[in-house]
Image (cartoon, rainbow, N blue to C red; front, side):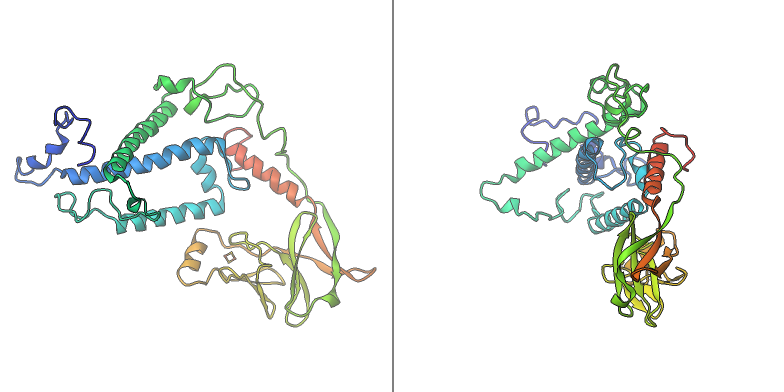
Length: 366
Ligand code: FES
């Protein structure tokens, strides 16, 4: 078995607790099959090692690099909360969970407990880049490398968790660069995994740039730049007016309307292929539909079968945003009434939520 090879003493496996002999002790007591075969233990070791390699890279990377527009939380301990606070983030968690469940089911190590698995532990037959077929490829050496890196990663992740929960419990991590930064000028800056490092306090990165004040609406009629006669029945045109994405169109009967361009389900632009049927607008992605007159929901995520309804489950059903539209008195341009402070208010709310999630604002967002 790989890992019990070149680095052992005179052919002696290093196994002080006798895990490799557990299986032979079955039926010793009460004639009961209790202990796993070493195949099961190796499968578990490899799986934990792989998960921890991914986890370690993820924990360190997301502390320094974050995807713009996605929930921002440098503290890996609170990152999942920030993800749950975002509807698209919640959907991502569902997708990941479903994917893991499917993979676990497909590659379940059947009969490994009794040492009769029909594959090598950890060998899922997955080698999309065909490394194993390259000349000079030494499979055993790579397996040993993976095993060692996996063991190291398990220790790394366990250390990060210990240092976070009990600051100072992993002395090597106490002086390392900060992973979890806290805001507030007077707040001490936590070092790697939560321990406090003196003298490295930095100015908060968010409060100086964004406001968390309450922003009041400022309604204004804004010209779209085209006339009612430019639109055919059922035609739609997307415009951004004062920072608000809207969709101006006509019903089949030729009545002018204006709705929010972002689908209330996932926030995707309906201008990418939405249909107007009668006085109803239908989202191109999962087929949700709303009345264009009052935004009343008619159908929520009916397609494609199974996937559409599943994605709809995790997001609260909502009405479609409706805007007043009219033909301008001078020149006949279509004008739409929008809140020109909407973008500012959204950003203020967004930052308030993020800061509250981190315990840095007044805590009234939730
Ligand atoms: S994104 Fe519009 S219905 Fe799903």
